[in-house]
Length: 310
Ligand SMILES: CC(C)C[C@H](NC(=O)C[C@H](N)C(=O)O)C(=O)O
Image: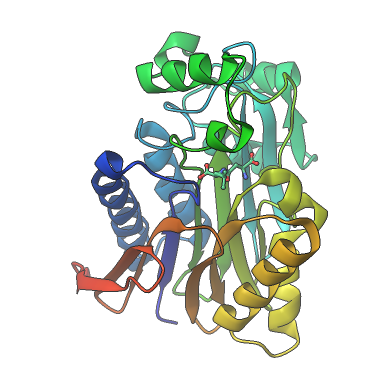
């Protein structure tokens, strides 16, 4: 099986001066995931490490750089799913950890549950030896500025969500044909305390099944949940659609039915991949057969060689 990894860095509007960094970030994540796959690493390893790298990068709305909730705090959601067994692990509204996706993986591998939330998730992190980090280490000046701006009485609710975006996600197929997905986010700007979005909900913020493929989405979480976007894409693939057709059908349905915009990265069990979005832009990158593909706006498809380790 020819390994492949596809990542996204969010479907929200990225201000012009930040697009370059976003593209660099997704390319780096795709390269990291691809190197793991080429060394014979698993699809789960590849998606978790690719996502963890983007969580650490302050340019994305996940881990450090997350958007703030209404109280000015960071509450993060993350999910990982293993398409071999349909096991998944998630954390929601978790605070003061650097890499929620790695904690989600521990939930999958070390507990009999699929999702841990808030304080319970923090306690579990401590019990696993995951270090607690100071809240301030996750908050960037940019996130603080957006938060303040959105608290102003005349703030425009649409504008509110613009400017600082970058939920992150990845899907991969490894050499053995195993498939996985992972997604991580700080959520929506100035969300209510305790708000849980699509990301940690299996079938919404991601799904992976070796028999079909895998999806990681980004977009307005409430809309994604209403249509269970990830599972909807896979449903269309089960009906014989290609990853690209299935993505476009599911995204069009979300737009028509609930007025929601977003994007997805997708792979099928043959290694065919797609990166599609109904929003204005989505930063994405894919690596397969010695080539790195990437883009940001509709119609973009740039390529460059990627190092092959054999
Ligand atoms: C405005 C939207 C398109 C921006 C997008 N947000 C998410 O994906 C948020 C995540 N799905 C949630 O609801 O918690 C982004 O970060 O790029």
